[in-house]
Image (cartoon, rainbow, N blue to C red; front, side):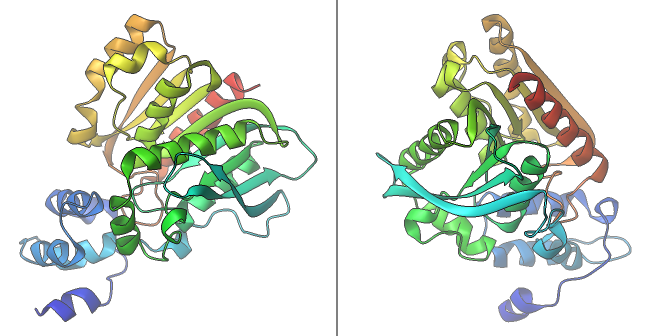
Length: 307
């Protein structure tokens, strides 16, 4: 199959998570984290021999379909949403932009920062911010790509843009986003942070960086914080891991031991049979049961510690 056919072949419909070969999931993980490009992902998947289908069809089924990821409408009467800009000294451009969503009403509300994956503020993350607002929090989903024009409308370009940013300055931009939300007039000053993949790692980073200024964290399959920084963590954590996610999971034994030693309240939940990205309902990596249970745990955690 030609390169053009690999890139343009229509995505296959109706393939479920259980029908996708683990080797294709592993390739998709490499692709998602920028270790191979889209063409190589599809080409290598096409060479995988599977029973009852094709590796290429499985690979195409994993590509995101964001229209199906929307669970809370932009016009839902329970929320109010708009885009805001705010200063970000020391970041990639000195200014940041984010998607701010509040419950209907005057507030103030406990605050939740929602941190995106390694491709910018895509529609799935915006929907998560709306879910947080429906649960009673004022939520901010910052777009780390704003200094380079914002999320470009597709994940491939978004991933490349994010990889090209000055990474320490990107972390400063996200730290400034947390501080902006914490002190916003709609916020009670109680701050929780959740995030996914790259954003899950940022949850752990912010917990270690902000100390007592962060009050709860819920990282999803995010790399653990450096153990040397754990002593500064004061926010209780509820960590969500996928069973089939060796690279991320390998960072947690030392992290959890350090959390225990430092007396940090924490829970680590590993969801059986799941893949990295199981909360993202735009691809077959999504596990409805694990996503629902983990989100219930996240909301309960924030309601407990941000009250």
